[in-house]
Length: 429
Image 1 (cartoon, rainbow, N blue to C red):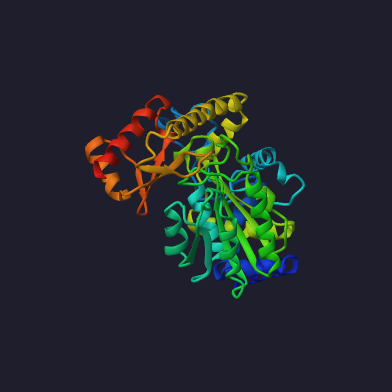
Image 2: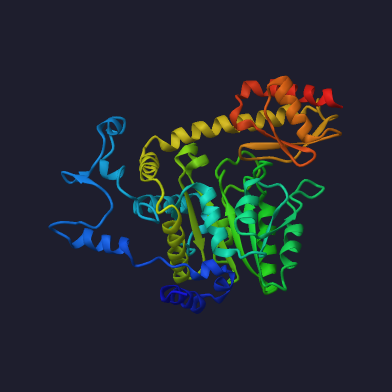
């Protein structure tokens, strides 16, 4: 183990040994090297004649660029487009995103957390968390209604053992008891990683207030049983809360609540600000010790430096420009109303009872999606039938569920969409 990694681990152990115990073997070995980037930073500050350190071309004091590219980006300074961004991201966007987190999540006020670290969108942030906290055969606890890529990120890449609990109770509530039992089953190991994704993909569900309180209480009970838990909060669809759900991230309620609970927030503008192709996200750590947060940032920078080097500088600049615009909140509210209208229209259509002979629907109150639970028809069979005979695309999940993304269907077209799904289902009964 490198001496720097050893020093970082000693710092974590001194501040919170439970977080050290949560780290994977890779996580313990990670450190951000004092190498070329450090020397470049020193040269940028002190080399007043010639700075011959960085692997980048310059011309007349600016980054070198092709006019055919710059002509489409003329309102931006070349320095904010063409240069390498720091591994942890532009300092300004990190500060602005932190301010946004505090504004959007009242429960974070007065709590200690790291500065958000820029990732290559949320998939990369989740992958970083997997590297930091999961050894082969370590247990990842998560609901059975999940985004399929979790299996690749945590199972295939890190060879973690994925333990699912049933998402909904028979009463259509979040299954807090099932979550708690799955975590308590890891008492012999003394460690578990929990993944929560709200608004949930695929169901479009976010807990209501009493469910959120129950989740926090259950995790405190698990911690009191001597189990260290890293809680990964996947907030990909944050802010799209339409009805009776909580309106903030669970990260705010979980950060700093117990030495054995490390809260990790993975989020970003890709869906919040409708910039999917920009591939910009953030990972933020919530621990009562600022030293622990700093060490986890250092180790995260090591992962970034050793994999992608840094996230897209132009995309960070574009997002920062949008967040600073006086029109940002107004434009975002307009898009929210469109999404809310689609979600409520779907619920109106389904609540008429016209289709309940062939399917039920899982509770939904947020996000991009909702799920139908089919009666007597196989999900994959229906998916193919709808695609080939009606020109309708849906996602088959397991034996009996299909996911419908109302996010990409105009509100006035939703009526026809569900009529076609119903007709297709009827064909197969």
